[in-house]
View (spheres, rainbow, N blue to C red):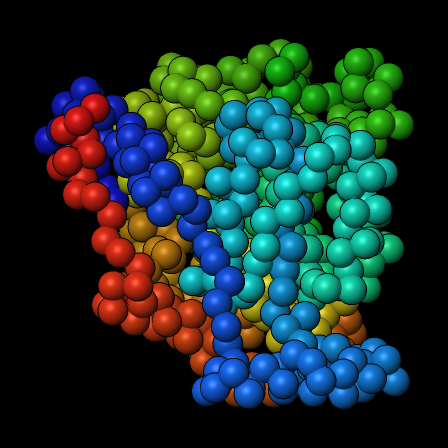
Length: 460
């Protein structure tokens, strides 16, 4: 939703706070957002002899004799575990696994509705990275993939690397790879609109957490010159003389690598110094507003691009960035234009890799997904306020799924090989089934309508 220019600042702020107010009423009304439903027919109680004992023993023996049969005899092919320890939930920080459960349920909801994926929240009662890795290994027999979520840095980097090595199913950290995928899509199209090239763009990245770390890696693999990137943490610009970062290079080698290989100009100083003459600002730091100042944006290059991705409030309000001279502004929020939303990535990417039973998800798959997102938006038309697909444009999800599945096959990590048409038909069928099933349940009243917005907002 694009805010009207006629609205006052107070009205815009009220609009931004509206989802949180509705959430506090709607969540307890439904007591959760997901449930388990049968997918097989139950004509009479006699059918339980097929789906459970004694008939189910035949399927068990089949899997014991041939472990690959688990993908056809069970729903493992479509199960994803959403695993968290609750140490970095949205912009809320370390709120614990129970407080993080509403987010994980929401993730599972998006997995199902947008990708047809059956995802389960797994909120772990540990912060120990070794125990989290072990928990993922223990879950592997049941799940076809694992989505790591809301893990604090720097342990999130190691957990992703170790689980990718040790598990024979795709493991993905959405705060890293998901964010990088959708940001890449937005950058591709934003640069087209302003007439600049990826390999020439100067990019300032504010925040060196999980999101910007992987985004920088993906952008460099996609064609951005490492020397054209300047990264800024809470202490200032990363450069080769950052002794504090060097002292922690064993714990966080990725950050030290940025010190050595980005920032070809050797800049030092603050965020303001990093933003001077930058074509693009990608912020994934802490909730605003006011984290990025209007006057800092004025120091950027002509036709600048600002991605302020912190949740739940962006580092700078979009209208402030525009007033300061930014040509294109994106945030992570659905109530502003150009939403850089991970939901455009993870449901379809998992749809694709699950459909070919891939053993991993690579950064090149992220790039394939990002390029397909950008291509879809460009084909239907892009402009300054609309650079990436919108969540309601459901056709983008099977396209993205196919792109990831084909890349999996190309990279040799797919257990099964299907044609482009087979992949398309399969993805469309599964995704439409999820969407149409939800619509039918709502129509029949089995999912009841929520309290009216007027009633909820009027009582607060």
